[in-house]
Image 1 (tube, each protein chain N blue to C red):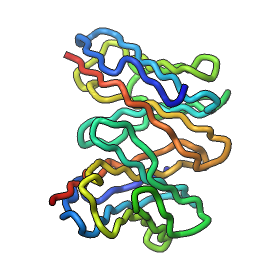
Image 2: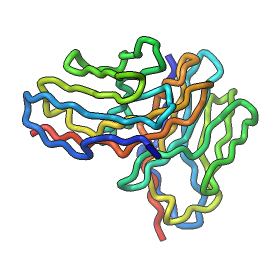
Image 3: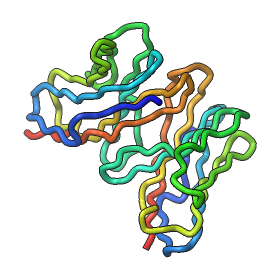
Image 4: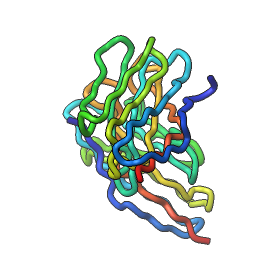
Length: 115
Length: 113
């Protein structure tokens, strides 16, 4: 596609339910990132996929959070047993990552509200 | 680990005034530095990036940033603010010789007529 696509754009879920957020990166981009944006918290790094390397999961806040990237393309971020503090905008980005300091292109995000 | 600190969560300027948004970084290796902008209800987009080729980097919409190693800073400036510059600005550093981007907490710029 022309840009990074995220779905759904908005998600309201009940506390305790599981949610899946989807990211379609730009075709050919080998690097994919997930961030969480909360008011006053900036962009919190969650996880980073780079080609066939093991993902960098150092930013995942708890074991309720997981992500996978199938076939080096689409990625799914899963949050199990959602809590109210999980409410935020979840942003996905991708980059060529052929060399360092390549530009990351961001999707519009998924706004998650846990009620 | 590398990190960035953005001083001032909110900055307000008058239209036509100088814009200065501060960013300091921490890095044990030469960093790659970026400024991203997020306009209201839009996604993040790249303003400019430091590639080590030149310490003064020019970006879109008249913004520029200067890399100062001695001060570990990469402040963003624009000589004359426009109303359309109102947005949130994020400084970022790539970490540990990978493409993983670490962002600051952001600075919200307001421009008054």
